Image (cartoon, rainbow, N blue to C red; front, side, top):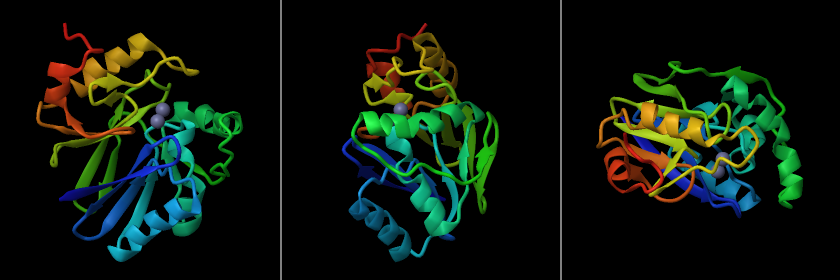
Length: 214
Ligand SMILES: [Zn+2]
Ligand SMILES: [Zn+2]
């Protein structure tokens, strides 16, 4: 069984997720912790719940999702897992950091690449990688069929969608990802997005004004 803990971090208000099972194995997805206080909050949660971090994962590598990568790497010795197409987005993140007046230390360890259909295993529990480009070129989502949850990054939000005006973004590609990947999942699948509150696939099919079905 998987439990999802959400944190809202940084001036960008990004959702960082710790996903863990009853054996206390966990993965850290999109650690957006920026300040020392936020890093401490994440670390305290892991410590207080006696969790063993096994994976460091990014849905994509925009600034707000990568602030804490190096910290998690240093703290727990984890290598960053991303889609190959995000390598250049990650390399560009410090440049946007300077532009946004949010300088940070970028991840400098080795990269492990994830592709469509790969499976992240936490003991018996699995998160399947779905390739969902459009908001960024190598965006991926992490889906648990057993738990009916998806960590969706910046693809689909409650009654909204990810922006497509950033480098490597493309509106039609994003629509294709939502329709062909996310909307193919059962209606009751719970969506944990990169910003804002959780939603479900069924709710978005009914209420999302940006995605026309047909
Ligand atoms: Zn993004
Ligand atoms: Zn974001």
